[in-house]
Image (cartoon, rainbow, N blue to C red; front, side):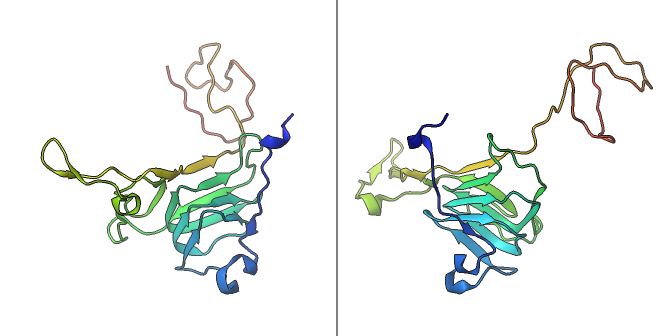
Length: 197
């Protein structure tokens, strides 16, 4: 059983609720969405085709078939969840990155048409914020300590648990229509199997 101090309660804004958005204006195609530190958003309807989804807060999929569409998804010190280890996501989650490798703008550090998980902080320097000394390296170059990491980025995708592979307990001849395997599986009719030596 969980102890009370291990239980986390979170106020979550629903994507579909107009009051979750500044000026009560939900995102539309081409918009950028920022989930700042301290905010939690639950995707409970298909998203429009976003330009950028930047997550420094908490973002999760509701328990239903959903599509998330964006050119860039950057989890910058935030948390992105589709299901959990204790409660796997048993629906269809589709994440589509739009654009192409030649014409999509490349963002510094992370690239173009991407899904990236990074820590918040730790990139570049912040001597001006912490009054750090600029010093010379052993090669005579100027050096400043990097910023400390403020938040650690996290992405967890937990789908329907299933057995993805097993072993044959008996050799299968070419053209066999019956396979004897080590354990029971829940593979659906029509599942493509690959058998290797």
